[in-house]
Image (cartoon, rainbow, N blue to C red; front, side):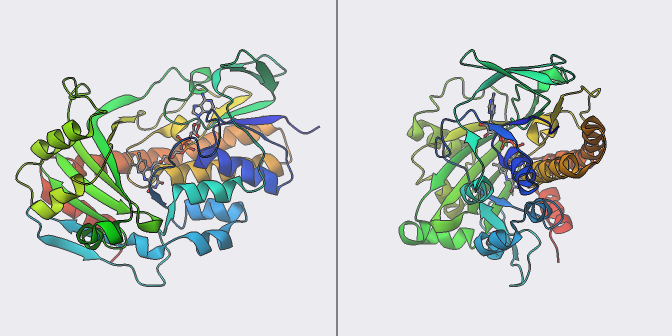
Length: 373
Ligand SMILES: Cc1cc2nc3c(=O)[nH]c(=O)nc-3n(C[C@H](O)[C@H](O)[C@H](O)COP(=O)(O)OP(=O)(O)OC[C@H]3O[C@@H](n4cnc5c(N)ncnc54)[C@H](O)[C@@H]3O)c2cc1C
C-alpha cells in the first residue's frame, strides 16, 4: 500500500519535493499557510547552482523550462568601494550556466505546474507516533489529519521542527532592511546602469549595500549591518521616510550614486538574519522529517533555496523508488542532508563574517575566492 505523505510548506523545498513525487506518480498533499500563491510578494531573484538547484529541477523534469526562463546574464557582479570606485566588474560568458538567476515567482509557478496545493492550511503542530509510526498534523482552524510521513518544509520558523528537535534559530547580530525599485531602466536609468544585468555590492565596515536585478526592471536593494535586534526601538518601521533617514545616517559618507539606491523605495522591510546552529541534527523520529530552512537555516549567501530544492528532490526520489522500508529511505536522506548542509553552513557562516565585518578588503577577497574566473 502506498504511503500517505504530506509536505508542510509550499516554498522551493516543499514544491520540489512534491513535484518530484508527482513525476513518479506518487500522491502527495501540499499544505501551505498562505491563502493563495500571490498572497505575498514573492521576493527577489534566486541563483540556482548547476550541481544543486539545477540538479533538483532536472530530477523534477523541468530543466528545459528553467533554461527558457532563467537569466545567465543575471550572474554579473560588480563591487564598489563606498567612495564609488569600481573594484570588480565581473560578467559571465554568454554560455555560462553555472548559476543563472530566476525570479522567485517564476520558480514557484514553474514548480506548481500540475500540483494540487491546499492553500490557507496553517499548521500549528505535528505530533509523531500516533498512527503506526505516522504523525498527526494539527491546523490553526482546529482540524487535524494523520499521515504516514510528514515532511516539514515550512522554513525558518517551522512548526514541524519541534516534533524532532528542540533547537530554535538564533540572531546572527546582522540585520537587513530591504526595499524595491520598479521599472529602473525607465525611471532610474543611473541606478539601472549601476546595478547592471546582475548585482552590485558595496562593502563598508560592518555594513554593506547590495542591489540585485530581477526580470521586468525590478531591483531589490538590501542594506545589511551589524546591530542589536532592537536597533529600531525609536523608529517606526512603517514610516518609509524615517527608515530612509536612519539608513542614510548609517551609511553617512558613502558616495552619492551609491546612496541613491536608498532614495526611491516607498517601503522598507526589516529582516533580521537568524540561523540554526551549524550541523543541526536530531535523533530520527519515524513519521516526521525536515528539509530546507526548517532543517538548516543558514546565512543567505546563495545556497538556501538550492539546498532546500535538492533536499526535496532527493527525498522524493528515494521515497518513490526505494524498494524497502520508507523509513530507511528517510534515515538515509537525513544523513546525507546533514552532511551537505553542514558543509554549506560552515561556508556561509564564514562568508557572512567577512562580508559584513570589520575589514571590507576581506569581503572583496571572499568574492575573488568564490567567483569563477
Ligand atoms: C534576501 C535573501 C536572498 C536569498 N537569495 C538566495 C539565492 O540567491 N539562492 C539561494 O539558494 N537561496 C537564497 N536565499 C535563501 C532562500 O530564500 C531560502 O533558503 C529558501 O527560500 C528556503 O526554502 P524552503 O522551501 O526551505 O523555505 P521557505 O522558502 O521559507 O518556504 C516555507 C514555506 O512554508 C510555508 N509555511 C511556513 N509556516 C507554515 C505553517 N505553519 N503551515 C503551513 N505552511 C507554512 C511558508 O508560507 C512558505 O511558503 C535568500 C534568502 C534571503 C533572505
